[in-house]
Length: 98
Length: 462
Picture 1 (cartoon, rainbow over the protein chains, first blue to last red):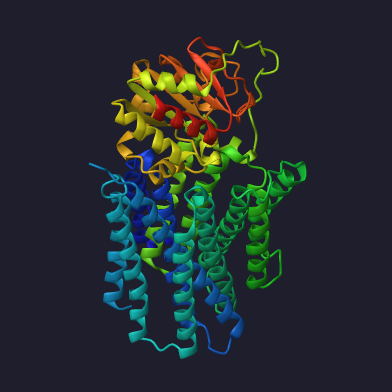
Picture 2 (tube, rainbow over the protein chains, first blue to last red):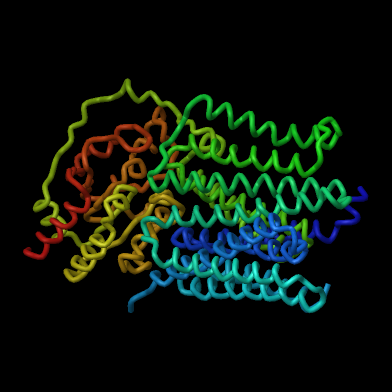
């Protein structure tokens, strides 16, 4: 009970996010499902923000953790940049010729 | 924390949502992608704004900067090199990087959590994030290898049993740890869980059949989103939580849509099981009629309303560009050409649309199954290229068929049907197709690409 009381704001936030997310995505036509998926994939790359915050806190002499964290940041950046670029490339092809 | 940083994360969250919203129409989708990407840049810049209030050793900053630079360049190169037919592989690979990032994050944080006195809830969140990240990472790598044809399906009993045992251990080990029965430091438990999750990801994807891959890709995508949201809880970062949840919701929604389009339950897909119908018994002799290229070209030249139903076979033969040529040629003769796309055609949701868009086919000519099914009788001619189960009338009238109940394109209702096939091999579901024996149906055997090229050549002469 105490847990719910302390985290009520975040619980509201999560529930609203779920509903808004489903509502927004349900309107995407099947034609655009692949770009939607790779676009969503790129958005999940926001995990890199977490990796960067983590790297801020690592002691500079802890080389192993620095390396692991560096790889994490690299993977996150790869996910973000690859995801958005490839989505953009796909969407460029969906053009109407008049 | 700085208010400015919080506002930035809010902006990022809103732009993720706006970007996804704009994806709902082909006209605005490009802008949507741009908006979401801008939001991402804002989120990253905001994170660096924190440096104004805290000091970080310069070596850390250098590593971060180099990693971001390399990742960005690498992503750009990979994205611009990929063939459109290989798109599902690449999306899986990028998904693996996201999952991998979540997993490494969890591993490092677990060490931190071990040192400090972090409370129970945080440890549970960390473990969940670690597990989902690792499953998404290794599962996506296997999905990538399968899509690229480097790994074959494996439905070995050991694989299935092994994956179920590991699934159980995801619950058992943390429970045992939190009740103090496993006297190990949290850090070690976290490492063990990460390892088990990596193995589980491999075993989980291995048995899933080739045509079920669209379902798995979107499911793995969703799992990465959930891992991101979990990591967001650990850092109390709302942009991460919201972004992760949106991705998770999108993935789950697409997964369920795919399952419905194949009339399969998610559980059956995940178990790699197929419904066994009474197929062998009613293998009646079909009276099939074969046709040839010149006859097909002749029929096409007389038809006014033509539908092309592309399937997996077309993607394999890389014939999408020829489809575009054929369409242009026929439109010059004042025929109307539509492409009817079944939701599960291709190797990921909507993949066929991308392939056809690549071949410069206007998206207004791409019709969804439900849009045209009421109108199929008005088509003078239907050309089925490399699609099998999605046009099988058995789904509607044969209750014994394993695909009974699956929504299909009602191609059999049109005036003339020509099916382009390599041979009489059966489709993915392993059932014979009643359509082939129907009066209005002819079969054109041969490689789809060659046949299309020959039809185009003939049409130019007529």
